[in-house]
Length: 326
Image 1 (cartoon, rainbow, N blue to C red):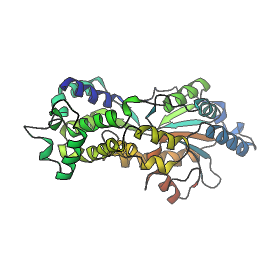
Image 2 (spheres, one colour; image 1 turned 30 degrees about the horizontal axis):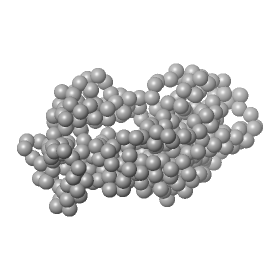
Image 3 (cartoon, rainbow, N blue to C red; image 1 turned 120 degrees about the vertical axis):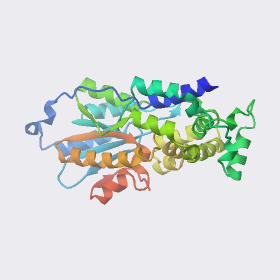
Image 4 (cartoon, helix red, strand yellow; image 1 turned 90 degrees about the vertical axis):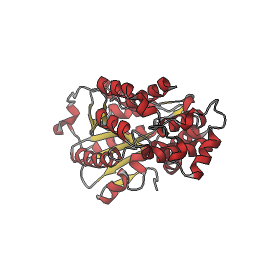
Protein backbone atom coordinates (compact mmCIF):
# COMPACT_ATOMS: atom_id res chain seq x y z
CA UNK A 1 0.00 0.00 0.00
CA UNK A 2 2.78 2.41 0.90
CA UNK A 3 4.44 1.93 -2.48
CA UNK A 4 1.22 2.50 -4.41
CA UNK A 5 0.51 5.69 -2.50
CA UNK A 6 4.00 6.95 -3.18
CA UNK A 7 3.43 6.31 -6.88
CA UNK A 8 0.29 8.47 -6.67
CA UNK A 9 2.28 11.30 -5.15
CA UNK A 10 4.96 11.02 -7.82
CA UNK A 11 2.33 11.06 -10.57
CA UNK A 12 0.89 14.22 -9.06
CA UNK A 13 4.25 15.91 -9.19
CA UNK A 14 4.78 14.75 -12.74
CA UNK A 15 1.55 16.54 -13.65
CA UNK A 16 3.61 19.68 -13.22
CA UNK A 17 5.87 18.69 -16.11
CA UNK A 18 6.00 21.52 -18.59
CA UNK A 19 4.44 21.58 -22.01
CA UNK A 20 7.37 20.88 -24.30
CA UNK A 21 9.40 24.03 -24.79
CA UNK A 22 9.00 25.54 -28.23
CA UNK A 23 11.44 27.40 -30.39
CA UNK A 24 10.66 31.08 -30.20
CA UNK A 25 10.74 31.42 -33.97
CA UNK A 26 9.91 34.90 -35.23
CA UNK A 27 7.13 34.73 -37.80
CA UNK A 28 6.87 37.49 -40.37
CA UNK A 29 3.33 38.16 -39.21
CA UNK A 30 4.84 39.81 -36.13
CA UNK A 31 6.33 42.55 -38.28
CA UNK A 32 4.02 45.60 -38.01
CA UNK A 33 4.69 46.37 -41.66
CA UNK A 34 2.97 43.14 -42.60
CA UNK A 35 -0.24 44.03 -40.77
CA UNK A 36 -3.06 45.13 -43.04
CA UNK A 37 -6.28 47.06 -42.68
CA UNK A 38 -8.05 43.71 -42.79
CA UNK A 39 -6.76 42.87 -39.29
CA UNK A 40 -10.18 43.24 -37.57
CA UNK A 41 -11.83 40.82 -40.00
CA UNK A 42 -8.90 38.44 -39.54
CA UNK A 43 -9.42 38.58 -35.80
CA UNK A 44 -13.10 37.70 -36.07
CA UNK A 45 -12.24 34.88 -38.44
CA UNK A 46 -9.83 33.39 -35.90
CA UNK A 47 -12.44 33.70 -33.15
CA UNK A 48 -15.05 31.92 -35.28
CA UNK A 49 -12.61 29.11 -36.05
CA UNK A 50 -11.56 28.76 -32.38
CA UNK A 51 -15.17 28.55 -31.18
CA UNK A 52 -15.79 25.59 -33.46
CA UNK A 53 -13.62 23.57 -31.06
CA UNK A 54 -16.58 23.43 -28.68
CA UNK A 55 -14.95 24.84 -25.56
CA UNK A 56 -15.37 28.16 -23.74
CA UNK A 57 -13.72 30.92 -25.76
CA UNK A 58 -13.48 34.58 -24.77
CA UNK A 59 -12.06 37.58 -26.61
CA UNK A 60 -10.30 40.29 -24.63
CA UNK A 61 -9.93 43.82 -25.98
CA UNK A 62 -9.16 47.31 -24.72
CA UNK A 63 -9.45 50.36 -26.95
CA UNK A 64 -7.25 50.25 -30.03
CA UNK A 65 -4.87 47.69 -28.58
CA UNK A 66 -4.50 44.15 -29.86
CA UNK A 67 -6.84 41.24 -29.26
CA UNK A 68 -6.41 38.18 -27.07
CA UNK A 69 -8.41 34.97 -27.39
CA UNK A 70 -8.79 32.95 -24.18
CA UNK A 71 -9.50 29.22 -24.43
CA UNK A 72 -10.77 27.73 -21.16
CA UNK A 73 -9.60 24.16 -20.61
CA UNK A 74 -10.20 21.33 -18.15
CA UNK A 75 -7.82 18.44 -17.47
CA UNK A 76 -10.11 15.43 -16.97
CA UNK A 77 -12.79 14.11 -19.34
CA UNK A 78 -14.32 10.63 -19.91
CA UNK A 79 -12.25 8.36 -22.13
CA UNK A 80 -14.90 8.40 -24.86
CA UNK A 81 -15.21 12.19 -24.79
CA UNK A 82 -14.60 13.93 -28.11
CA UNK A 83 -13.70 17.53 -28.73
CA UNK A 84 -12.83 19.27 -31.99
CA UNK A 85 -9.10 19.72 -31.62
CA UNK A 86 -8.58 20.56 -35.28
CA UNK A 87 -10.61 23.76 -34.97
CA UNK A 88 -8.44 25.05 -32.12
CA UNK A 89 -5.28 24.01 -33.96
CA UNK A 90 -6.45 25.95 -37.03
CA UNK A 91 -7.00 29.02 -34.86
CA UNK A 92 -3.47 28.64 -33.47
CA UNK A 93 -1.91 28.65 -36.93
CA UNK A 94 -3.64 31.97 -37.71
CA UNK A 95 -2.54 33.62 -34.46
CA UNK A 96 0.62 35.64 -33.86
CA UNK A 97 1.57 34.12 -30.52
CA UNK A 98 0.34 31.63 -27.92
CA UNK A 99 0.35 31.87 -24.12
CA UNK A 100 0.41 28.82 -21.85
CA UNK A 101 -0.17 28.51 -18.12
CA UNK A 102 2.70 28.41 -15.65
CA UNK A 103 5.48 26.05 -16.63
CA UNK A 104 6.05 23.32 -14.07
CA UNK A 105 9.66 22.35 -13.45
CA UNK A 106 9.92 19.10 -11.54
CA UNK A 107 13.48 17.79 -11.44
CA UNK A 108 14.62 14.20 -10.85
CA UNK A 109 15.71 15.36 -7.40
CA UNK A 110 12.12 16.39 -6.65
CA UNK A 111 10.86 12.95 -7.66
CA UNK A 112 13.50 11.16 -5.60
CA UNK A 113 12.72 13.34 -2.60
CA UNK A 114 9.06 12.32 -2.79
CA UNK A 115 9.99 8.65 -3.02
CA UNK A 116 12.44 9.01 -0.14
CA UNK A 117 9.81 10.70 2.02
CA UNK A 118 6.94 8.49 0.82
CA UNK A 119 5.95 7.45 4.33
CA UNK A 120 5.67 11.08 5.44
CA UNK A 121 3.44 11.78 2.46
CA UNK A 122 1.36 8.62 2.59
CA UNK A 123 0.76 8.08 6.31
CA UNK A 124 -0.58 10.30 9.08
CA UNK A 125 2.19 11.25 11.56
CA UNK A 126 3.08 9.31 14.68
CA UNK A 127 0.27 6.94 15.60
CA UNK A 128 -2.56 9.32 14.79
CA UNK A 129 -5.70 8.32 12.91
CA UNK A 130 -8.27 10.19 10.82
CA UNK A 131 -10.57 10.67 13.81
CA UNK A 132 -7.85 12.65 15.61
CA UNK A 133 -8.21 15.45 13.05
CA UNK A 134 -11.71 15.29 11.57
CA UNK A 135 -14.94 16.57 13.01
CA UNK A 136 -17.50 13.99 14.08
CA UNK A 137 -19.59 14.80 11.02
CA UNK A 138 -16.69 14.46 8.56
CA UNK A 139 -15.51 11.27 10.19
CA UNK A 140 -18.98 9.81 9.78
CA UNK A 141 -19.00 10.78 6.09
CA UNK A 142 -15.60 9.25 5.51
CA UNK A 143 -16.49 6.07 7.36
CA UNK A 144 -19.60 5.64 5.21
CA UNK A 145 -17.63 6.17 2.00
CA UNK A 146 -14.96 3.67 3.07
CA UNK A 147 -17.43 1.00 4.16
CA UNK A 148 -16.47 -1.29 1.29
CA UNK A 149 -12.74 -1.31 2.06
CA UNK A 150 -11.17 -4.68 2.89
CA UNK A 151 -9.32 -3.24 5.90
CA UNK A 152 -9.10 -0.05 7.91
CA UNK A 153 -5.74 1.17 6.59
CA UNK A 154 -7.51 4.26 5.28
CA UNK A 155 -7.74 5.52 8.85
CA UNK A 156 -3.94 5.96 8.86
CA UNK A 157 -3.60 7.19 5.27
CA UNK A 158 -2.86 10.86 4.62
CA UNK A 159 -5.90 12.95 3.75
CA UNK A 160 -4.46 14.01 0.39
CA UNK A 161 -4.01 10.46 -0.83
CA UNK A 162 -7.36 9.37 0.57
CA UNK A 163 -8.89 12.25 -1.39
CA UNK A 164 -7.15 11.11 -4.58
CA UNK A 165 -8.49 7.59 -4.15
CA UNK A 166 -12.03 8.83 -3.51
CA UNK A 167 -12.06 10.95 -6.67
CA UNK A 168 -10.61 8.13 -8.75
CA UNK A 169 -12.71 5.26 -7.39
CA UNK A 170 -16.05 6.94 -6.69
CA UNK A 171 -16.11 10.08 -8.86
CA UNK A 172 -15.31 8.50 -12.21
CA UNK A 173 -11.77 9.89 -12.49
CA UNK A 174 -10.21 6.45 -12.97
CA UNK A 175 -12.10 6.19 -16.26
CA UNK A 176 -11.04 9.66 -17.38
CA UNK A 177 -8.34 11.02 -19.64
CA UNK A 178 -6.87 14.41 -20.39
CA UNK A 179 -8.14 16.10 -23.56
CA UNK A 180 -4.55 17.32 -23.96
CA UNK A 181 -5.57 20.77 -25.13
CA UNK A 182 -2.17 22.23 -24.33
CA UNK A 183 -0.46 19.46 -26.30
CA UNK A 184 -2.67 20.07 -29.34
CA UNK A 185 -2.00 23.81 -29.21
CA UNK A 186 1.72 23.26 -28.72
CA UNK A 187 1.90 20.92 -31.68
CA UNK A 188 0.01 23.31 -33.95
CA UNK A 189 2.18 26.25 -32.88
CA UNK A 190 5.38 24.33 -33.52
CA UNK A 191 4.28 23.28 -36.99
CA UNK A 192 3.22 26.79 -37.93
CA UNK A 193 6.23 28.54 -36.40
CA UNK A 194 4.01 30.54 -34.03
CA UNK A 195 5.97 31.76 -31.04
CA UNK A 196 4.86 30.71 -27.56
CA UNK A 197 5.37 31.82 -23.98
CA UNK A 198 4.65 30.41 -20.52
CA UNK A 199 3.32 33.11 -18.23
CA UNK A 200 5.37 31.97 -15.23
CA UNK A 201 7.12 29.10 -13.50
CA UNK A 202 5.97 26.73 -10.74
CA UNK A 203 9.04 25.08 -9.23
CA UNK A 204 8.70 21.49 -8.15
CA UNK A 205 11.00 21.90 -5.16
CA UNK A 206 8.68 24.52 -3.66
CA UNK A 207 5.65 22.27 -3.92
CA UNK A 208 7.52 19.21 -2.70
CA UNK A 209 8.43 21.14 0.43
CA UNK A 210 4.81 22.07 1.07
CA UNK A 211 3.75 18.48 0.43
CA UNK A 212 6.25 17.05 2.91
CA UNK A 213 6.07 19.67 5.63
CA UNK A 214 2.37 20.56 5.65
CA UNK A 215 0.49 19.22 8.71
CA UNK A 216 -2.46 16.87 8.08
CA UNK A 217 -4.98 19.64 8.77
CA UNK A 218 -3.78 21.40 5.61
CA UNK A 219 -5.38 18.71 3.44
CA UNK A 220 -8.74 18.50 5.23
CA UNK A 221 -10.39 20.95 2.74
CA UNK A 222 -9.17 18.68 -0.07
CA UNK A 223 -10.60 15.61 1.66
CA UNK A 224 -13.89 17.39 2.27
CA UNK A 225 -14.12 18.31 -1.43
CA UNK A 226 -13.20 14.76 -2.47
CA UNK A 227 -15.93 13.35 -0.24
CA UNK A 228 -18.40 15.61 -2.04
CA UNK A 229 -17.20 14.17 -5.35
CA UNK A 230 -17.64 10.62 -4.04
CA UNK A 231 -21.09 11.43 -2.69
CA UNK A 232 -22.06 12.91 -6.06
CA UNK A 233 -21.23 9.59 -7.67
CA UNK A 234 -19.47 8.08 -10.68
CA UNK A 235 -20.82 10.62 -13.18
CA UNK A 236 -19.05 13.55 -11.49
CA UNK A 237 -16.24 13.74 -14.06
CA UNK A 238 -18.48 13.14 -17.08
CA UNK A 239 -21.09 15.69 -15.95
CA UNK A 240 -18.36 18.32 -15.57
CA UNK A 241 -17.05 17.55 -19.06
CA UNK A 242 -20.58 17.80 -20.48
CA UNK A 243 -21.00 21.25 -18.90
CA UNK A 244 -17.65 22.31 -20.39
CA UNK A 245 -18.57 21.13 -23.89
CA UNK A 246 -21.86 23.05 -23.85
CA UNK A 247 -20.01 26.18 -22.70
CA UNK A 248 -21.73 26.15 -19.30
CA UNK A 249 -18.90 27.79 -17.39
CA UNK A 250 -20.96 28.21 -14.24
CA UNK A 251 -21.79 24.52 -14.38
CA UNK A 252 -18.11 23.61 -14.61
CA UNK A 253 -17.23 25.85 -11.69
CA UNK A 254 -20.04 24.37 -9.59
CA UNK A 255 -18.89 20.80 -10.27
CA UNK A 256 -17.59 19.03 -7.15
CA UNK A 257 -14.70 17.73 -9.27
CA UNK A 258 -13.68 21.25 -10.23
CA UNK A 259 -13.98 22.41 -6.63
CA UNK A 260 -11.76 19.53 -5.51
CA UNK A 261 -9.11 20.31 -8.11
CA UNK A 262 -9.17 23.87 -6.87
CA UNK A 263 -8.34 23.06 -3.24
CA UNK A 264 -6.18 19.94 -3.54
CA UNK A 265 -2.41 19.94 -3.92
CA UNK A 266 -0.70 20.92 -6.15
CA UNK A 267 -3.07 23.39 -7.85
CA UNK A 268 -4.71 24.36 -4.58
CA UNK A 269 -1.45 25.44 -2.98
CA UNK A 270 -2.22 28.82 -1.34
CA UNK A 271 0.86 30.39 -2.92
CA UNK A 272 0.25 29.05 -6.44
CA UNK A 273 -3.35 30.20 -6.95
CA UNK A 274 -3.04 33.97 -6.35
CA UNK A 275 0.27 34.04 -8.18
CA UNK A 276 -1.36 32.38 -11.21
CA UNK A 277 -4.11 34.99 -11.36
CA UNK A 278 -1.69 37.91 -11.20
CA UNK A 279 0.65 36.39 -13.77
CA UNK A 280 -2.21 35.83 -16.20
CA UNK A 281 -3.44 39.42 -15.94
CA UNK A 282 0.09 40.77 -16.42
CA UNK A 283 0.72 38.47 -19.39
CA UNK A 284 -2.59 39.38 -21.03
CA UNK A 285 -1.98 43.11 -20.56
CA UNK A 286 1.45 42.75 -22.17
CA UNK A 287 0.19 40.61 -25.04
CA UNK A 288 -2.68 42.95 -25.90
CA UNK A 289 -0.25 45.86 -26.08
CA UNK A 290 1.51 44.02 -28.90
CA UNK A 291 0.34 44.01 -32.49
CA UNK A 292 -1.68 41.09 -33.79
CA UNK A 293 -3.67 38.31 -32.16
CA UNK A 294 -2.64 36.30 -29.10
CA UNK A 295 -4.28 32.98 -28.21
CA UNK A 296 -4.02 31.81 -24.60
CA UNK A 297 -4.93 28.46 -23.02
CA UNK A 298 -5.84 28.54 -19.33
CA UNK A 299 -7.90 26.45 -16.87
CA UNK A 300 -11.56 27.45 -16.83
CA UNK A 301 -11.51 27.90 -13.06
CA UNK A 302 -8.52 30.22 -13.13
CA UNK A 303 -10.40 32.35 -15.63
CA UNK A 304 -13.98 32.23 -14.38
CA UNK A 305 -13.91 31.83 -10.59
CA UNK A 306 -15.05 34.75 -8.44
CA UNK A 307 -12.18 37.23 -8.37
CA UNK A 308 -10.44 35.24 -11.11
CA UNK A 309 -8.72 36.41 -14.27
CA UNK A 310 -11.88 37.47 -16.13
CA UNK A 311 -13.12 39.50 -13.16
CA UNK A 312 -9.70 41.10 -12.80
CA UNK A 313 -9.60 41.98 -16.50
CA UNK A 314 -13.04 43.60 -16.34
CA UNK A 315 -11.92 45.63 -13.32
CA UNK A 316 -8.85 46.75 -15.30
CA UNK A 317 -11.03 48.11 -18.10
CA UNK A 318 -10.88 45.29 -20.62
CA UNK A 319 -13.88 44.31 -22.75
CA UNK A 320 -14.73 40.59 -22.51
CA UNK A 321 -16.89 38.75 -25.03
CA UNK A 322 -17.81 35.10 -24.58
CA UNK A 323 -19.75 32.71 -22.33
CA UNK A 324 -21.21 34.03 -19.10
CA UNK A 325 -19.03 33.05 -16.15
CA UNK A 326 -21.03 34.43 -13.21
